[in-house]
Length: 155
Image 1 (cartoon, rainbow, N blue to C red):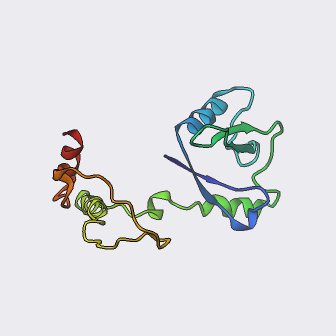
Image 2: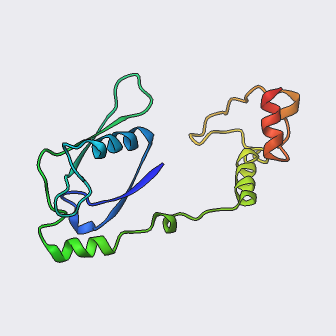
Image 3: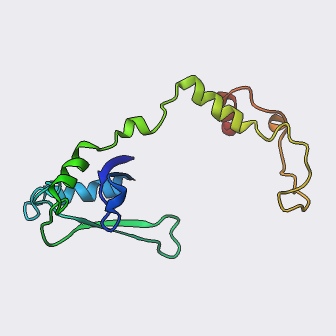
């Protein structure tokens, strides 16, 4: 994922926000930035707003996000003091998320994989009987490690 600082028009009172987007939007934005006709769309005084549209088409699992630059140049803010404040108060995306160690992530995944092994309930959250999934002999007990779980998938 890519994270970028943005100002959402109509929500300027929220200040600078962080927008996370994927590879396709990233490539679209790069193409816009490389197009000489648009100039530097990120310039606070002579840049351009970017319109973002999300559409979910029938039969598709995920929504499609499209980005396109506005036709006219616009200031980041008509209030120079506000624009300057936004530029100095851009959140640091690396401080927004806790980076965990390999061992911590392994434990989280293993705990998640083994979460249902100690559950003796026979009902669902709606109160009806739970269907017991068919299991082979090797999956009857919890996995000792993430590697063991993946090895079981390959058998």
